[in-house]
Length: 213
Image (spheres, rainbow, N blue to C red):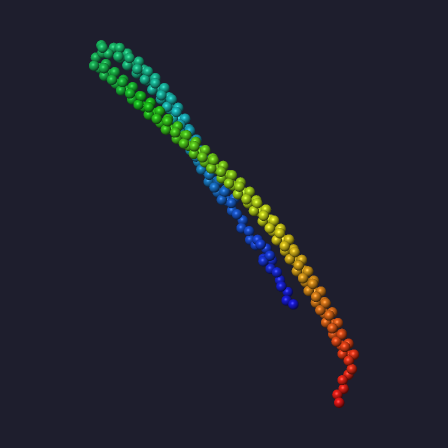
């Protein structure tokens, strides 16, 4: 009787389990976002330093301009009080002072415009940093969710492996039981054959001998 062997690979429902590469992908995304956030923070610090320096220079120049403007206004008032008796040269000096005063006002307006532009750029940078922080937090949450899925998958994998181990043990037990039964069947066949032979020989001896005439 031919013995049929069972293949272990045909008994296992899970031959191969591909391991996910979630962690590597998430770490690459998080590292890139952290580098972008670090670059933005450095740029933000540089802008803050430039803004502080500009503000300081603006305040100093504004003070100088205001002081000069007051001096010019005082001189202008004095000249206006004396305009009736001043010569053409005095009138030219008044016009010069007025021109300088207009130039000071123009410079002051330009400085205020620069300060406004720097403030807008700083606010935009803060919004970008906040948005990047939110995105980084979202990536972190996704990483945690993927890690939980990976843990669940590993748990299922371990349970499947344990189930396969128990199944292989049962198969091994069945093989041993089959071999034992085959051995017993072989013994029974041998005993039956010996008994049959003895019965045949006994029957033959009991029969009368035949004679030929």
